[in-house]
Length: 353
Ligand SMILES: NC(=O)c1ccc[n+]([C@@H]2O[C@H](COP(=O)([O-])OP(=O)(O)OC[C@H]3O[C@@H](n4cnc5c(N)ncnc54)[C@H](O)[C@@H]3O)[C@@H](O)[C@H]2O)c1
Image (cartoon, rainbow, N blue to C red; front, side, top):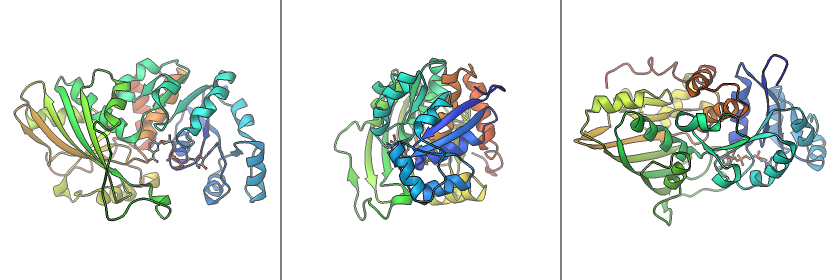
């Protein structure tokens, strides 16, 4: 920690998730972004330096290559890790798992992202579900975008006593927008070969009590994922009760098709218009006018901004591991405040439910 009690954070891997985590850390009043590390030499790291972030090479070789490409380099990852209390590893799937031995050898706290398996960190995290169990731990894994959305929404129903079991179909974006010239699918839909798809079991790594089954299909677009859910509730409930249950989470944004928010692109555009960095939709955007209750059966759909949803969770995970905030609600409120979550919700909902 710094003299004033600020947590010093390193971000290893400045890609889709890493750059958003770095931005979010930068916005917290109780954290300092010590620097970001990567292996890249292109425009993405140049942007980091123009933001005033210190950039480090993953190895001496990478630092040399980055410097040769004209980037302002502050040293190697090794040197960055010497300075920090915690590292958020946002390197690609399975690369992070190889870094863990070094973090452990240093006695450094670390956070992994959803591309790694539960076993590598031994704990999987969604703030509203299991913050307390992460407090003071050495490591956790912020679960994937889809899994985060599943745990958030089902935790809201569970907390209100309404959840018996849930079955969901996930329409998954094909690739991330910035690299969609390199790959992705076009003019087809690709079902995941197994039912259940991995997200349901992954949600149980956060909350083993969840009775949840998922099926998934990859779709030819890049904006976000779209989920359709059928939930068997514990009892007959009204639509208003269900909406109240979801409203208890600041990270579930109620949206309405009849307000013009009838598609993923419209919601993304709204995030741009309200000035969110990277057009980030940190919340699950859940259509309340579409939501349907029939007796004890509940049907709803929501949008998941895969690039953004895990960012507030990562910030909360930093506070939990470092023990700077023991109470989940307090950390969530601080993160929400710094990222503008919740502030816009009321203003964006002119009409009723
Ligand atoms: N992209 C998403 O929508 C998304 C959503 C949720 C979780 N995740 C998870 O987040 C993690 C990161 O994914 P991403 O999409 O940001 O990947 P990405 O490819 O966009 O970014 C990874 C970054 O790490 C850098 N890198 C590669 N090897 C490195 C090394 N050895 N040392 C340091 N940096 C290195 C790359 O240059 C790149 O900048 C993965 O676990 C992924 O599963 C991704």
